[in-house]
Structure formats: C-alpha cells, structure tokens
Image (cartoon, rainbow, N blue to C red; front, side, top):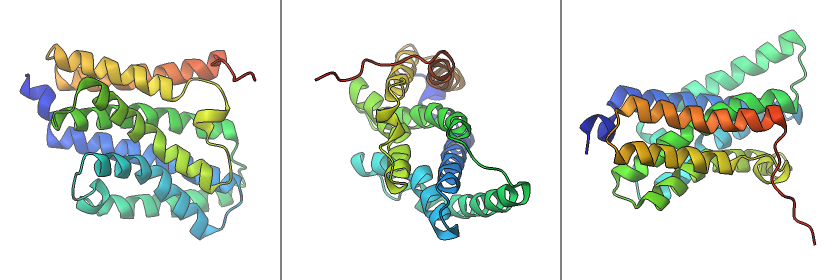
Length: 213
C-alpha cells in the first residue's frame, strides 16, 4: 500500500481534522444563535457539533485518547470561535438563517467523511466498515446539534441527500486507497464528491423518497 495514502502526513491529517471541526462548530454556533440560546448554550452546541462525530468514531474504533483530548488546543480554538462569532453576529445585528448553516455543514461533511474513513482504514477495518465510520464521523455531530436544539435532525427531515453524500464520498476514498493513489488526491476527491453532492442537492433541490404509509 502506498505510504503516502497510508499516512497522509501528520500535518495534513491534523489540518483536515481542524478544518472539519471548525466547519461543524460554525454550523452549531449559527443554529444555536438561530434558536436564541444563551452564551453557554451556544458554546455547548458548538462543541457537540464539532466533536460529536469524531468522538463516536474513536469510541467505536477503541482509539485513545480522543482527538480533542490529545490536541487540547482545538478546544480553545472552538471556544474562541464561538465567542468571536457571537460578538460579531451581535455587532452586525445579523439573524442567522437555516440556509446559512447549510454551507459550513456541507464542507464539514466532506472533511469529516475523509477523516473518518481514513482513520478506519488505518485500523485495518473492512471497506464497508471504513465507509460507515466516515459517515458516522460526518453525520453524528450534526445530529447532536439538532437534537439539543429541539429539532428533528436535518440529516433525516429535509429529504435532501445528506448521509448518502457521505456514503458516496467514503467509497471514493476507499477506491483510491485500493489503487494506491496519492494521499492528497484521495482526500481532495472525497471532500469534493461529498460536499459537491450535498451542494448540488441543496441547489437543485434533489429529494429522497419520503415514507408513505
């Protein structure tokens, strides 16, 4: 197996985790602000959105310490982002909309899909398990964010492909892994496919079939 794909490079792996964490933290901040939570509520929702998926992944893969424990600086970064975003939104008198939340969420979906799939493959998981780990990493933080904000999770209720996009992106990563593609190529392709499909679904209003009793 190509060592470039196997190990990305520690700096690249950390960058992906940080970017994904920031994207989901921002989606949590905007959702909490939209629900008019207090400052503590905004920070809690930001942390749940940012770290929920990665924590579940690490639990299922029996990884210790968790990403945010090993890199405590990311906790400070999310806290600083939450405080700065609250101050900026209040200063600008902006009202976050559901549409504004969708774009950082789509970016985080792509980044976390790549990170979760990669981590599972490094642990020797079968292809399907690795893809599902990518999906869980990408989706679970948003589910926690919406549940805490008293919403049916957006991943289930708007009928536009969400987890399906992560599932497709995860298979792209696995396919390139099998063909020993460069690490940066597998990462980029996974993020582009996942976030691109989600963006297209939002733009074109693609919808999955709704349950009909």
